[in-house]
Length: 338
Length: 253
Image (spheres, each protein chain N blue to C red):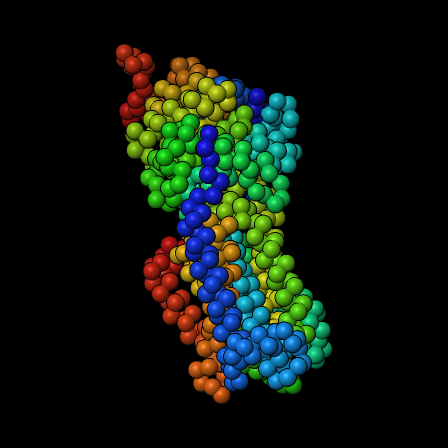
């Protein structure tokens, strides 16, 4: 019997190649463009000469490369986190920022910084994960207790986010030296990315991405509904908790170096679905590429639009994300179907 | 063989099933009937091992089903619940998930899983739907794809909760026919169906439930002859012999 393990492979691989190219181009532009531009020959020279050999090298290795890597990782991490949360909660309006993961991670990072000053990167990333996980668990428990409709999850998340954000603001006011009051942290941005913060978070994000890609069938089976998933032999509660932990890890690790970056986790999964459909084995990698590309391009725009001044990229993303979210609500008929 | 012995189950202290005893024979279609809220769906879930009994036993060939790990019970019992989501994936992918219980982490479907999924789709006569998105299919086609998923699960027992609800008459008949063909493969097919006439006409055995108890059990003729259908449903049930076999219909009491 003739079988085709992967349907519409050619179509998908073309889309992936295109998304990969766009991502690569965005990364290249992000490395080359800025207050001091790098031409391609200068870039090549800086790459081969290694860090510390001249101005171009220092710009590449200490400024542009960490920043571009941070953009790519943050975009990929948040987008995949959003796709996982939307699938697990069966709610297209859910995302790390809306159900409180970002706020929880943000508060944890705030506490970490206020308590320990320049805390070690691993500690910050770990705390961010803990905060994000705690927030998502609170929302899930509240939703279960109150009937778990799709809207309850979103409203519970908004309530938890508001509370956690208020706590973060309070810490920022009480500990003004902890650098938490910066717009970069509160709305998300990459101008103060350091290798110390980025490296541990990068390792966590890459590991969590790799694990999430191996759980695509679990995500798709969960989407069939709880009873069907259990009938197919899935341990539903354990799988849900594992997937939410991965989502919290992705978003939390991102918050530890990029601040509370909103909307990427909400809008990118919807964009990616337009390209490759809803099957997780295509959706998650496409989310990673689209998220990485979008955040890198937005960061580039945020750097260049008002040069020499720089907008935190979170502001630009909110300008795009806000109207997109309203469009989404309008097209889905608001909460009527929740 | 799947059997329930003195089975009691409920939700939050309220008992829904009271001492249910029943046997479901391989190669036969058993129709579970009864008025709304009589515990049919709870019985099916408890039989599938998805709901824990408060008392009594669910045994499959002598093994206690509630004690089986989920993947092992899913290799023995396929369960199609009443409310099902409509996923935005291809029909083939969905049927492939019937093989979920046979894989361990990381779950990557193998060539033989794809072959089993294709065979199942062909068997239900929906091979041409393989690459179609499930969300774009009609209600009847979706139901068949769900049944193909249960077939790909390759179990000895198939439990279906209201598989014909919301379907037009032709699709209802086709689903009944598929249930019959599944039984011919040697499977024990157990289905909750609201259409009294369809169950009495098509099932080999009938389990009549009322207020969480088994009111009557046996062949359709036996359950009909017991006169308990009237008491359970509050309607008069009539039988008429036709060239196509015995037909049943209901009138108000």
